Length: 233
Length: 233
Image 1 (cartoon, rainbow over the protein chains, first blue to last red):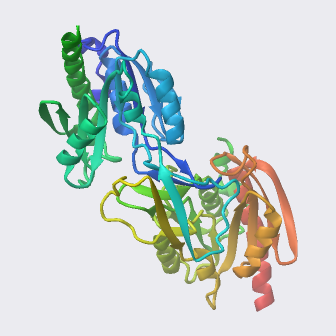
Image 2: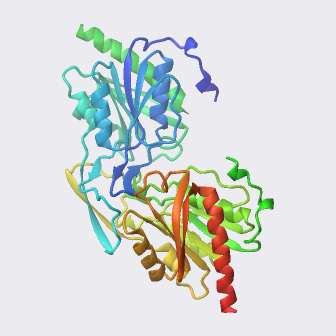
Image 3: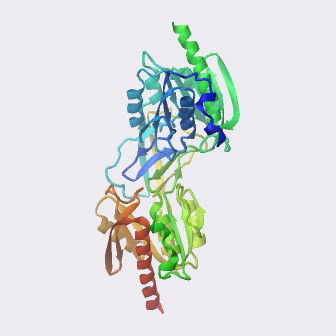
């Protein structure tokens, strides 16, 4: 793909010297040694963001749940499975990072009692007890010296409303909303279309290749990151 | 891999003229539009069996759950997601087949009420109601003119006991047991070691490449298939 060949030479290095931590992919929550709960995230958007941030000059740590994607050159990848493991990696790598982008589709719930042995299927009906997972992004965003925090909202209805609510509730600087009910974009697709919200503005990005979109998103992040820093100093 | 290049020319065509249906991979059971329950089957053993059966002369239909593997040349692949879809495909393709090999790790349970929209995570704890899926292999094996039926048993404990019980209970001709608690073989590995049971015998296959093992398994199936047919006529 021609877009992926874009040499960093031709892109303004707006992220030069910045440390960026990005989470990507789904998480897997074990039920027993063979079964798990997961979701349809392909990891493509998160990997594209990692690639884009690196092309724009950043030092990138990519914390990734299980997915079949190739790690872009020059990126440090930390492979995790569960939400708990993703949180641990995020807490380890986020201190002193400038930007934290939570693109992973972290499982909201984990199984309360993970079985040591494969569960036998004696019963006709069973009830699986689930409990809330830790919120990786909210945990990072509530730190006192928090990085510039970017979240994602994958929704099937009322996308703008849920996205803005999530941004406020989790103390984020920016949120990227996409409507996963649209079959041709988002999950598992090569393309995506999103709307980005920040405290007093929003911007639409029409359907385009995920790497192209990722470059535009990182450029937007860089602009708002610099603005926020100028306000703080 | 040199083993995968083995031309059918050098293998006795013990399955010539036989129709074989093989199920492979995991199934995915939807929770809502983005979440699902699945298992760690990579599909490698099932795909290797399909490849082996084809190399040994059979006409092969491969019914596969979601997995990232390439379909071997000359094989008809039917892609499915849920156990229900796998059963429909099996019922469609098994009549008039000679051998039915159920290698898929079919989800034992499905979610009772699949949500149309992404479930919101308001509650701290939730209970997911599950109910038994149809049993694909048992359904095929209880047909009056049933094909030669081969099952798989992936267990983490007491492997031989569960495997033999499953063979009897489901009316199978043969069962292939592997101990998935052994990390270096089985799920997601390139190699596997199994024990095969039939009504009055068993055979151990030590750790080897899955395609090599698949060829030996199909040869064993061919032998027992011919024996059973000779007994019936």
